[in-house]
Length: 76
Image (cartoon, rainbow, N blue to C red):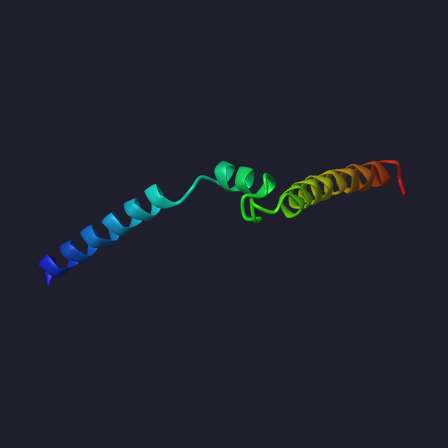
């Protein structure tokens, strides 16, 4: 029984290491998302539309967060 547990623990360790090494970092995933790597690169309109839309969405989110903080700090 102990030998099976050792094998299972070793297998889980190997699977965890492989998963960690093959998974991209969060910064890389965000960079790929914001640059539109999932859009069709041959279609320039879709690629640039995706990039512009995502950056405008981020800018709008930041503005809304700033506005909410300012609104609540000023007493509404």
